[in-house]
Length: 318
Length: 318
Image (tube, rainbow over all chains, first blue to last red):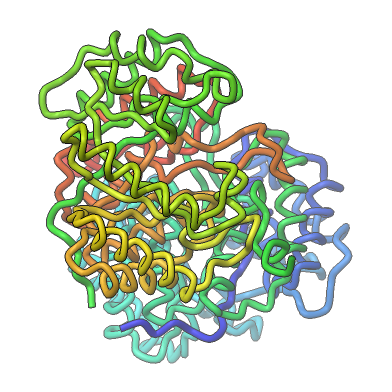
């Protein structure tokens, strides 16, 4: 049953998702240096910042300057997140942003209401307008995200039936709007996934959206991130989001018992792939340097494991 | 190919392996309270302390007093580690120790020399004396450990051929000494395992030691601990060592880049099992309380993930 892919594509989310959730803001020069260090490792896509409300997310208020500061490397795309028309227009005004047409869907209605002020059905409906906007701008639609695809702390477990319903809604939209969607990510937004659920839900996407490449946006909130990634790899999933050093956790954001862990850690995931003989195109030692830079910038011990232990390469070549 | 077990047995190693590796010593009363909290969660076996040289390991110098302090719970075994005749005699003199006859083998010759002052072959030979000692004391042999079964930082990768050789050596010893070995643990002593290696090496044990129950002693040194555990569960492995809160890491022990992660985290592993529908006999919420107690005792943020995020039970029953 193992169908490990030969090559895996890993997109870096740390600069956006990591720094966005931190309670502090960090100097622009340091964040730019981190993005450059990440690119130097060979990562082909890095989400640099979000264009969202500076009032709600002051950490990202300088997104345009950050993009303007980074020395871009050929072979790496520097993407941004936006969720509103205003954010999209801000991103378009920054020439350094590598625009990627992305659609967002929600499996949890309550989570959608809390994050967007409107329910999952309305959000899905609004994605049709995004299709039009992207079409008008001749911006290809690259990916769709299905958020809270496993469960959420507001609604609890998202059943497979509910997930299937959301996927059928996406399929209908794609058909109606004549969109060929290259990639769909199942996002385990708040850490509800387990390896079995990953397998079953990846199967469901393949069944209901045949031809669409499945990606996973995993969090390590409850310690299962890497097991979930492995379960997906064994199904041939070859597309992952991850955060350098495991950034994206929330040290002080009101969980019952202190901080919660962040995204699946990029360099640990790359290490898993390489140990399994899967190509990532990434220079792991260079990526570890970026992880250690992230730790110096944040100023506390981060969750990444490999960055503290080192790879096996040095020992193997002794 | 998934052959998930119905029930998994998890042995707690944190009080011994965790506190042994910490550079500080901690009050006896606090360590006793932690052992009691762990037992209260339903863990059936807890390694409380080691009887080793108080000069080399001062953290364990009070092992006898610790055993004498703990209020034991019916249904839990309170075990100890010893590696020398002197340590064994000290352990035997403490009536509260639940003695377990255990044999230790090494796949890495250099690691064995560094830890024991003699090579793997000599260590294997000495296990025959341990068989005799245990026999004289009418102490059943419960388990054997094969240390550094995946690789080690001194010798590099341990090949499957070398592992097979070590396993054949164990099989010969068992035959010569007429020992029926119930359990053999592959120990990933310094974090070299990956999920594929776990599967292949568990297969090797089953091939070369048929009838012996395979256990895994995993470390999360490079972030793959839970993926390795999942890979083993899918092969029907139903026996694991783990450490509460991920204790067993070494925050200041001279790794190149700061601290290294410890054993696979008990409560995260229990969570994985429960999410997969596997019974552990453990009250996860009670175990989380023990993990949080460990964090208060150690006085820094520990690696366990679930302890900081909480289980899904509360959200599911809303």
